[in-house]
Image 1 (tube, one colour):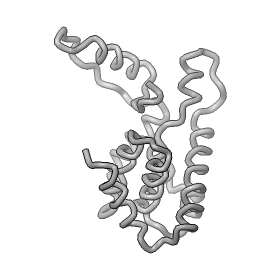
Image 2 (cartoon, helix red, strand yellow; image 1 turned 90 degrees about the vertical axis):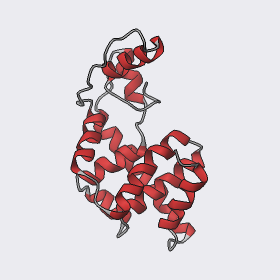
Image 3 (cartoon, one colour; image 1 turned 180 degrees about the vertical axis):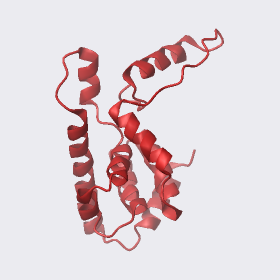
Image 4 (cartoon, one colour; image 1 turned 135 degrees about the vertical axis):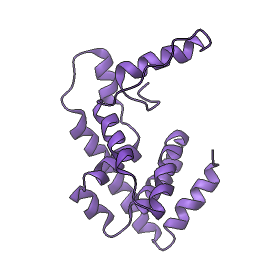
Amino acid sequence: MPSLALIETEAQRLLRRLPESRRRTLQAALIELCEKHWLELRGPQPESSLALALWAVTPPLADLFLDLYAAGNARLDNTLHGLKSAQGLALLVLAEIERGNEADVHITHEPMMASESAPLPAAWLERIASLLRGTLEIPMPHHHDAHPPLWRALYVIVAHIRRFDLPAV
């Protein structure tokens, strides 16, 4: 796993020609857009306590960004205003570093690097869309005694809630 310093350097390299004030403005706009997208995706407030707890937890911003990107969202295009998807993800990487959210930095880093040289695979984007909507089929692991009970319990939770992000679990 790459260090935060290396990830930050890679993100800054992608944004090297972007003035600091514009970077800050774009970061705020992207975060707001991703959070609004989650409000649209999650729907009305559920009644059960588990569903309510999940409803209140925002998934990683990178997943929301990629869902907007896959849909060809006009609001995302207007926000990025000519920047590439890798640069948009680099903005989110730097924002997550500033927030101190190491897990989401690593989640955002992978698609940032993958989208730098080529378009992201459609299968990857479809998987993220399924994750956000709770429609991803989760394969059942072998129920073997060698697996620690904690990991078996976490798997059952993930299979039930259909979310893989750590804050939701």
